[in-house]
Amino acid sequence: METIIRNMIINDVINKYPQTIKVFNDYKVDSCCGGGAPIETTAKRDGIDVDGLLKALNEAIGETPAKGR
Image 1 (cartoon, rainbow, N blue to C red):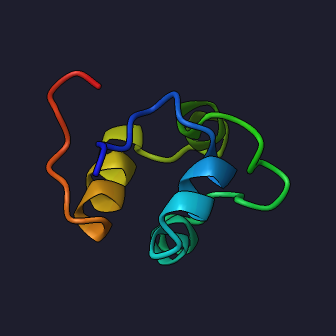
Image 2 (cartoon, one colour):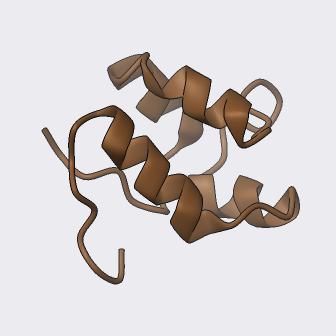
C-alpha cells in the first residue's frame, strides 16, 4: 500500500480505500463537492488539521505516514 499524502485527490483516495470514507466524515471533510480537489486544499478550506487528517487516513489503511508528506 502507498501512504496517503496531502496532494492526493479525495475521490481517488476514497475509490482506492473505501474505509477512508469514515475518516473523511469524522473530520467533516467535504468529500462530495470537494472530492475532486487535493486533501490539503479541501481540509484547509474547511479549517481542518491536515496533519491529523492524514495520520487518521493512513491509520485507516494500515500505513504509517512518512514525515513531511
